[in-house]
Length: 382
Image 1: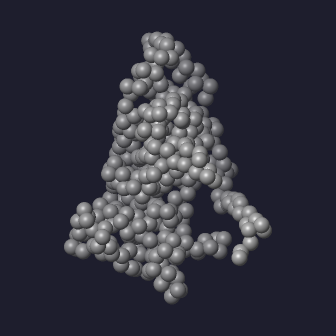
Image 2: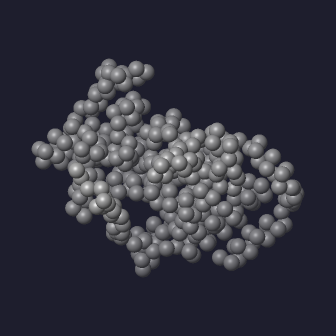
Image 3: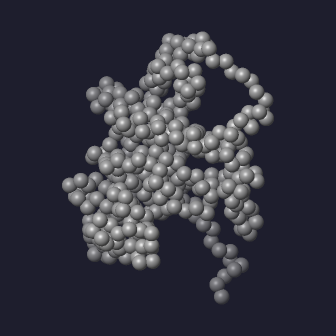
């Protein structure tokens, strides 16, 4: 490993690239001219090449994609307030701050980010989800996973109209069909949802000329005794038998782990600039960096998978994502500026193979639920 690293760094030193030092003001002015769209396009090209040429991972022949949202606190700057607006927080709504709502379209098996969206706090997660559907290039085998904050007839109809399959967790108390199924003790049921008349404007009928959607409700019992009700557009039980839904929806957790990498390892909220365009540059550059890291780590991941199956290791191992991100950041300049590719990739492979971490299956950590304080006894009911 050390020999590969020394060879890589030696080529970096011998490259004819020379860095010209500029003042901070000149750097800021030059950066303000860089369109964040450039990083979105890099991410698109990077993913397109990967899914076209690599034997990417699937589950039961399906590419599993998850959509989920989050928020980040933005710097206090006039351009930020103009671009993203402000929201009032605090007990008296007297603490205005600018917050951005984020949304990611994430491949939960290959750990790439196909699309990232950033908007003001007042924008809903469902609206950002519909923006994803306009941005990415779907495959016939795609299956989208959503948590229980997303289900709506409007979003489900959009997915049906685009021919995209989905699996959404439903709220037990919001949907009449779900309550009927639970009351009847059923676990797997086909239902028909219809788009309301007031929401049909701007939407064309489906292939059968109606606004009705055929879906499948599935009740899943979790190991801790709780239940979840899932709604999917795949009604064929040979494609998705009842027994596979617990495993299927569990894959959605990988997007939560992805957000953890974004915020705790990529330092997503530690913006390198105060103005709006700098914040957008940081966000879309982080999206590109996460995808590039996943793609560079993919061959090592597959090699470890083969070794785990053949019993060459005492314990199953996987790539250390923190080290993978760190190494990608270290060598990315050699790809795009110094054109040193092969030695950089060899160095990454050697380091990732020697810094793996053990896979610990069936690990569960209960969430810490903070109990609300009871109302003050000074304000008892009348």
